[in-house]
Length: 120
Image 1 (tube, rainbow, N blue to C red):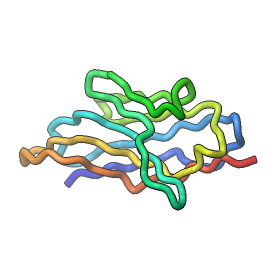
Image 2 (image 1 turned 180 degrees about the vertical axis):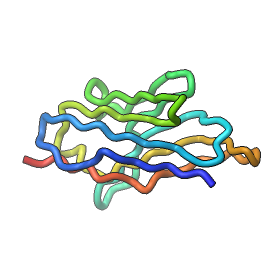
Image 3 (image 1 turned 60 degrees about the vertical axis):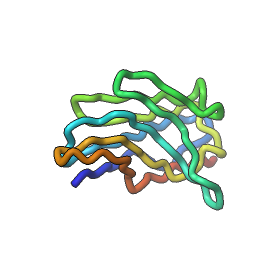
C-alpha cells in the first residue's frame, strides 16, 4: 500500500508565503515524477507544478516566478514553496506521484489534499 500525505496548508494574507509538503510512504521501490495540482470550488483540478526524479521542473503560467517546487528523494517528499500569494491561489492543493512499488505495479497516486486560503 502506498500513501501520500500532504501538510502545511492554511490561511494566509495576500502577499504572504506558505510551504506545503507531501510525504510518500509504503512499499515504494521508486518514485518518478511528483507534482502539485489544485482545485478551486466549481473549477476543474489544474496542474500547478511538476518535478522529475532528476529535478527538472514545469510550472503553470499563473504561478511562474512565485512558486517553487522541490523534492527530497531520500525522504520521498515533495515541497511547494508559495510566495506572493494571491486570492486566486485559494484552492485545495493535491500531491501526485508516479510510483513503482515492490509488487512491480506502477501507478499515479494522490494525496487527500490540503486547503490553502488567501484572504485579508
